[in-house]
Amino acid sequence: MQPRQHPPGRYRGRRRLPKLPSRRYAAVVTTAFLGAGVVALSAGAVVPDSLTSGSTLGDPTTQALAVEDRLNALDKANRSQDRPGPALSMEQGAPDVWLLPVQTQFQITTVYEMRWGAFHFGVDMAAPYGTPYYAAHAGTVTLARYEGGYGNAIRIDHGNGIETVYGHSSKLLVTEGQHVEAGQMLGLIGSTGYSTGNHLHFEVTVNGEHADPMAYLLAHGVDIAKRLEAATGGTVIT
Image (tube, rainbow, N blue to C red):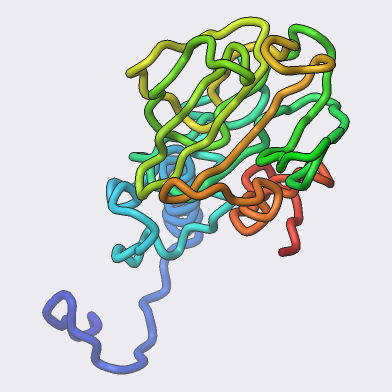
């Protein structure tokens, strides 16, 4: 006797499934596993559109994706040939992702403190002449030229009153008005302006007020002192 059929989509409690012949059963199982594999691969390679709405994820499918999976997907889609780390856009579902501005070995020579009778509003990361540096966050370049004591400098507006400054460059690789992604190469380290050696001077301002860049980035998943960033798998403890 054939099992009683119920309308699709309705649950009628536990019931015994009809036993399939072994060959047919093997074919069904094989097809199911192959189908599941295709779905899994598709899910890992595509970032849902709902990620572009900000940090609040309303789509249950999106909520099921791990942060690491989303970042890996963004990395594959947006990896820059000029940087070994992920290039992430503000519009691509990770608006709060911040990255180290210098990706190679560097030495912190000055922090946010009084120095030589004046307050030093940034953190200095010393590295060899010509070392690339990168955008810590996605935004729009508002200045890319020589600026007094900063030398060849770049300012980036990240929205919400947040700005980063990159000073003393030997060469600038972006132009004013250009939109840049987090992790995009901005320029090369040098010693232009008021500088005593090759380094990147990095500042953060919030609504026009200077903030300690090391503390600010630490609160956003980047530990400058330990050269770690949460976006690339580092364990950052704030």
